[in-house]
Structures are given as structure tokens and as C-alpha cells.
Image (tube, rainbow, N blue to C red; front, side, top):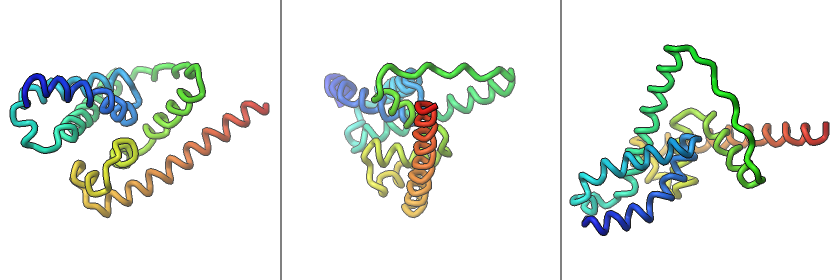
Length: 170
């Protein structure tokens, strides 16, 4: 891949990958950082990138691994210093943003493997077989993770909607 081809690939894929990683991490700035870092790592491999056949999948995998590593490091640090959790962010200005925040909040409550399967399948539009290939899990395991993840999201989002209605009535 030439520098010009890589630049065009970056311009097309960065926003999409950032959105996917935002759903995975729940933090837009963190999503931008890990996607940018993955592209930096890809830059050194750009010459053989098209030979791999799936450069966007490679970058997404690297970005997700970076996000998980950062999360683990942050978790260890927080456990070490025993800081109090940060205050909750103020809700967004419009309903669409609020629904996105609710979805990301619900996704963050899923176990990592379920969250990754749900994000890859529903937000990245990968087939179950492609999710299995990217995660290294058997197809049956991916199907189970998707089923459990959907059920957990449905419960979580139904609970959130119920709480909101109660708040409006009372």
C-alpha cells in the first residue's frame, strides 16, 4: 500500500473504527487514541498491508487489544491508589445522544468477551464466522456470547427505560 493509498484508507476507516471502539470502550477520546495508535502501528506495515487482505480488521483488532490493555493498566492503577470513582457525566443535550450514552453504558456492563462479540457483529456488521475468526473463539461460542449479550442488553435497557419513566411520573 502506497502512502497515498494508506492516507485514503485512513480517511475512510478512522471515523468508522472510532465509532466501533467508542461502543467497545464507552469513551470517545479513548476510542480515538487507540484507533490512532493502531494506525501508527499499521504505518510501518503499510507496504504489505493489502497482502493481508483485511487491513481494517487488523487495525480494529489492534485497537481493541490496546483498549483492553489500557483498561487493565488503569484498573491496576486505581486499585493501587484506591481512588474514588469519577462523578457521572451530565446527560447529553438531545434524545439521540442520550440513547447512545444508554447503549454504551449498557455495553460496558457486559463481560468483555460478550461486549466484543456484540460490537463486532452488530456495530461492525461482521458475520458470526468473521467474529469467530477475529476473536479466535469457536462459532458456537460466538453465538452463545451474542445470545447472552443481547439478553443482558435487553434487560439493562429495559431497566433504564423504566427508571426514566418513573422519574418523569414522580
